[in-house]
Amino acid sequence: MVLEIATITLKPGNADAFISVMPDAFPFVESTPGYIRHELHRGIENPDVFTLFIWWETLEEHTVSFRQSERFAAWRAVWGHLMEHSDMVHVTQVY
Image 1 (cartoon, helix red, strand yellow):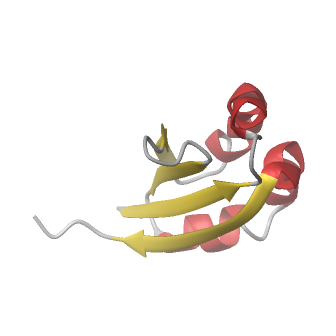
Image 2 (image 1 turned 135 degrees about the vertical axis):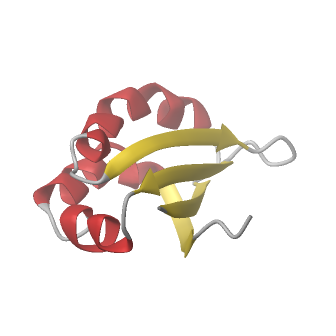
């Protein structure tokens, strides 16, 4: 299992809009083969920064099955205009 961790920094003042559109975006991820589950967390000190956790069965199911599909473009079309930038890493559990 692979955990994708994305830190999403929004343009200032867009947090409420981001939260309101995410229910429209998540079905594009959830319908991808290999998707397990996700969580979205909002920063306390900086409420325009969100951390997205998505669990995948394999790395390729994120990097190929999702990122190279039309689902990724549709996912970003829902909320990408609200984003200033993002950083992403993949990790696997050790303990």
